[in-house]
Image (cartoon, rainbow over all chains, first blue to last red):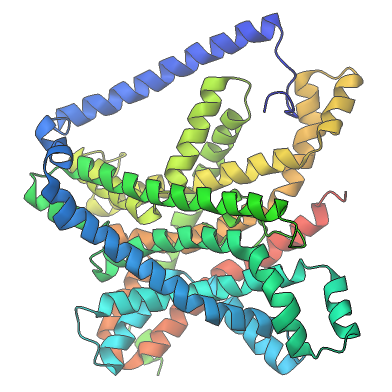
Length: 296
Length: 224
């Protein structure tokens, strides 16, 4: 990185000395902050080994609480993306329609669901299921969370699909027209198959957002996913709030790190691939994507 | 259909005002902390770069709900950190702002860093060839171009932050989505009307921001 950085050259003798000074100052500040945190935790008896040891020694914490919670998180996330994908594809294609009576309403729906918080949709869905359907009350949180996530992510995926189709070179449509394909055929046989490969990395990144949003369902709607397990664990293992939250956060981080790594591996692979047009949508989470902040 | 608005029982504007306050305080805080993080991530000091990278990757991959719950249960209840807030309500609000800053700043940092990366290396090389010093290169050549290209990504972060403030309902801050949950349970006959009112409120908050900053970013974009 330093070799091609815009901001500085390779350091000389004085710059090296200065860098060492900065390193020392930074270390001191960091150590003071860490020390303060540890003192605070020790004060409230949060460093005691019995608060942390259950996660290593007692396999029951994992089999009774954490793993079933993780399973519920994955189930909600998987259901959401599987249901949201076809809806998103339809909405995305609808927004590219030549007929304004399709394009405009679909555009309005997509923009509406993208601009309101996903939590609003979850809360609304929970109440709607309670009032209008006979979904049993223990299944209702899952239904509500999946509905909220589908409504929101279908509109985000619609934008990904639209962008994926728009990145394809015009020559693809021209060639399809030249051999006499109709609009539907062009979309189904030429544009969509290529767009799908181009948008795969963006879709995997969207999965990270979905996994993160399932935690909302645990905190507010009572879905028994990973985060909500902290209540039962702290109740059973002696108020080890900080230890439990650290372990839960680490599980999320590892899960999302695997997904992110997979997305960037996929992107690299698709960019190198000879079969595709080489058009790849940027990773939504990379911070370079100019969309609606959907990666956040 | 909308008679619940006139009953005087619900402080709709008050709840949205809390949402706006959460957004503004968190926006300012995460801009500062995010700029600092971005500075660390592009700095010539390897240790600072490592810290910036580690912080961004760890916090960005944690759900915001976990961050806020950790602020409330971990910092607030367990460690008894009040951040100078007096009553239960103000402590919750301050902890929510802290969590939102910790989370949002990672996205601000990445937006700023990608802005610096959009400046072609040739620009800085040409500037150095003219004999400009490090700070002159930064002040006159790199940062003006970088800032102009990050308006759109930062606008996206701000819009996402506005929507993310609803997560503070998870730790009992009385903002818009918390009020919506109460109202939707009490006024079950007006389910759709309540949803429409709150959805409209968030559209009003996010749409102008997006349109205005989108227009600004087009105006100031560097044509290459």
